[in-house]
Image (tube, one colour):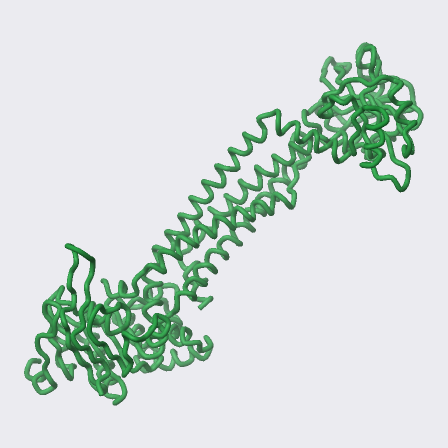
Length: 234
Length: 379
């Protein structure tokens, strides 16, 4: 079973003469136990695909199954709950809440899932230890380096043990070494047989971490490569 | 999620303080203007409220407020005393003679002439001397503010002479009369002497003040007096409100204060509302992140309302504190004594601030609810 499976999905923005077709009958798969990379030029529809897969945007046509749920059949409330419980996000700009400390930021998805703050922060602290930020738990995002902030964001994406982790350009703002560290943590997470990681990226340095690479252009997946081919590419 | 909302609100100190003080100054301005307004209107009936012995005032049917007196006939007093239910009724004179001191300082005053025999209507709050001393010939009691107006910078001393319409009288007491609408000295004298201070007129009986027998309400007695005498009879409260309504209808006070209050409300709404709305806009990315993570819209609405109400409550409390400090300071000054903060002032201001908070929160909530969670992927 695939973690994510789209069949012929379409997504439009605007209407009438100004209507833009961002996704054109896109077929895409992301498997459990794998890290799937989505690469392609700017404007090719990668972020739109990511938003649709994550349930942040509605698709207009086609079938979308995520973690065996038909996303088109879910109500807004169900989709919200689905996202809260099953999806972790890692953003290019980290999107940490500047008023919260590192440990509080990591605890947010747990608190959103109804876990008491104290317990949530205990789990968040344990995860921050594993990403090497045990000594920076009380630091505000403004007191952390870019790499540290992305590791906090990564801990936040993983803290509620989501089955699907969605990452948008997670290494774009990081140096090579920090980027590799973040990708290693993501790849490790993806090794779990009931988890999947989807990463949208421009960064050719991270291709080596992908189990599969989906190439996107003009709103379609134009080519997909499996791990063996990925090794050659990287 | 409450702690996150509070942290988001207070994280940027300068914006947070800007928001709090915008609401605080709006609160202060609203409470201050409504309090001054209420204080001025309260002054219009000060002399009525000061006479605590009587509960019914009888006057010429055309009299609309305290300052406007058309004298009654002396026989009216007897007619009123004859009305069933009157426990007692006595004369009261109100005039505005010019008072002159030995040094030549003079001021128009409010002269209250009280019943010679009973001294009903005498000032009960005395600061110096005794009201019973009005029984002495050629004696007056002056209120403290009036004394300071006539004798600026001089110590309060009894026995000083004042000239009233060529009559030399002696100050036998200093009272704590409520501040009148105009800052004139308030003087009390016996009726028979007070009418002399004003200058001779054919009729000089300004008011008759009365008290009902036990078991009869002032309102009922007023009805009986009006039926029996064709004069106008009002309870103390009714007469005070008559004065307030007269000033509201016939002066520019309500318009002037209304404009100031309206401007305070508009400026307060715009400044506080805009500050709060901009605060939300600045935090839009954070709200978007929370939306993406799966925080429900109603939780986000709760967070924004918490932020709005917290800022509103703190700003309102600070503003009220500023107003109380203002009143405490100016209450001690003679010219501004009588300034009051009624619970209605506080309630009206609280209502206005609530309105500001609701409008600002509503605008912010609309913006956040319309926000596409997918926006968070935009760099």
